[in-house]
Image 1 (cartoon, rainbow, N blue to C red):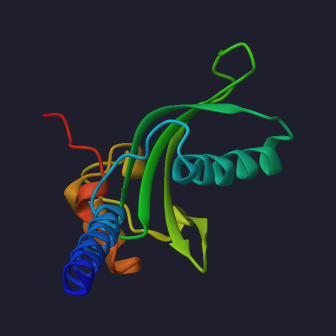
Image 2: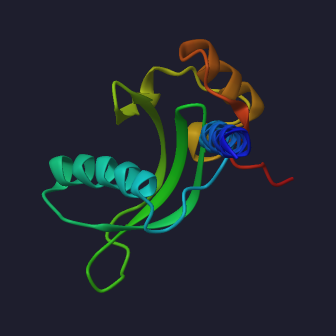
Length: 148
């Protein structure tokens, strides 16, 4: 009886460890954080705080694009007032998760693609390569697919 109990405990521990491993892999996989999730809230809070510092206005965001992978996030958002009306032109932001918090990355230091002047507003493959040169480790799959 003790042997069966021990085998059962070992089997349960194995499934438990496998579950933790799968959760860790999912966190590192390309994903869009769900509405209301702590990860999405943390990203939006950083963007809202930055907007407030620049404008003095509290906003909510319409999320046009949000992808997270390997500690990097690309967000394209539009700031809305409390009535749901756009109050400024939205745009993209690159964020990096470091030291337990999301931070906004300075995109003004990334070389533009001379053949595509929209830069981060519609990132071309060359713009993304230039961004990856400046910030190694940024995964290309977080960016929106370009429409042709």
